[in-house]
Length: 174
Image (tube, rainbow, N blue to C red):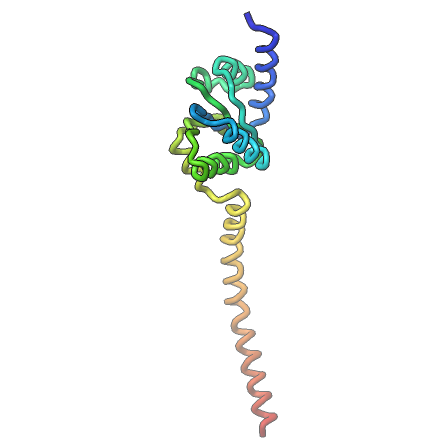
């Protein structure tokens, strides 16, 4: 029989699941309170949050918000980092935290774009450049050929202008 407290937790988690673009499930065993607080602070700065969740309540909330593929995936003591913006940024924050803090936290798996991603895929995502950098690279790749075409088309006119300029200087020198 669900208690009122559990129903509130499920409602809260439903709201989190519905807004999240990415979720990173971690094993938080051995993590000290100051480390959890530091991780939460870093995630908040990057439009994400970290919640320690009860597995059964997380599964109910996930199912109620359309994340049916997460059924029976929450096992053991887990905390979930929910990201609300750039998915790679959330994964990168956790990965950087793991690298710099040498904490006991482990990324187990995650979910994004209606699919489950394993720890290896999360590590690959964490190494991707940010969305802004990727867009800049694409834009640079699109602009590069245009600059080449403009350069090739304007080269004969530029050469003609240089020849005329040299002839003007030659005539002035006589």
